[in-house]
Image 1 (cartoon, protein in one colour):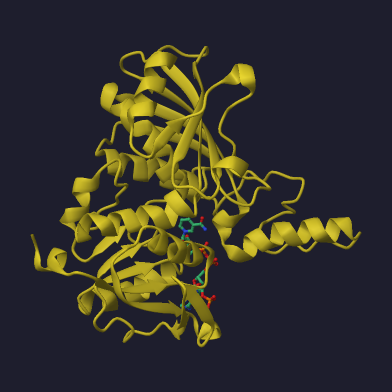
Image 2: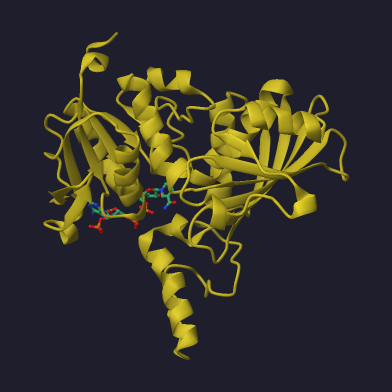
Length: 339
Ligand SMILES: NC(=O)c1ccc[n+]([C@@H]2O[C@H](COP(=O)([O-])OP(=O)(O)OC[C@H]3O[C@@H](n4cnc5c(N)ncnc54)[C@H](OP(=O)(O)O)[C@@H]3O)[C@@H](O)[C@H]2O)c1
């Protein structure tokens, strides 16, 4: 057991504590009884002095600076890529393990990219920073892994239905505000998305790249290959923002080397960690974001043989992207080091 693992409790810094993911982190650390000695809540200058509650105790938010990490064992970053690039090296220098929720380090070959249900062993190859994958990719990978272990997957075609909280706390508020404005007959204010999100779907998550895919869609391609250690698997994603508050849904079609029947797939899904099956179409039972939000489990349903291609299977997967897609996954990574 390492010196780090021998500690009874850890000094934890939460960077981006006032955000949508930061708030979720506070809930999850408490729910999972994470062994915290001291907790430091960090955000921008704007939030310095703001009070947040953790496990019944009130904490004052401090401004993030390069000196914020003295004595910190674990630094959980969720304040955007710019902050991660600038401040994560300071945290590592101070001796902390950084678990980063942004995309800043995900494709850096020296930084492990980890979903504990998929590739926990990679976490131990870190040089101070471990990256938490993209939320939509995490949810898809939790479902793909048991199938992939049964038969190699050649390619994946996926369409996502991503909730507004995936773009942050203010984006989720924008949907609520637009609903209120619509009811009151007021002009709808559009700020966080390229278009009105109320009563709409927007096939545009993150910015567009030269090949016509968005950065979010390319994250699904690149991060899947990195975590499965398989540069042959190809992912074609269309990422879509929908007017839900929390939890991302995905329609996934895979082509495998060996055929997988729907019954076999349901059996593999049911035995996999972090995953449950809701697939009772006769009774209109399938996973939906309203029911899945607030939990850590990803749910699959609508499992069927794809009729358009050979050796292909189609299914639907839903997971809470603030929890399993971000904070829960990061805390699970931290738990690999404290147990
Ligand atoms: N939302 C999701 O579903 C999700 C899922 C996976 C990963 N992520 C990633 O997690 C990160 C946070 O996302 P979020 O959705 O929680 O965003 P958010 O709700 O907009 O929160 C952003 C957080 O970053 C802090 N911040 C912004 N500028 C800062 C600065 N200059 N110095 C220090 N702190 C600063 C904010 O503090 P103030 O309140 O003081 O501005 C706030 O705490 C992003 O990298 C995002 O890509 C998000």
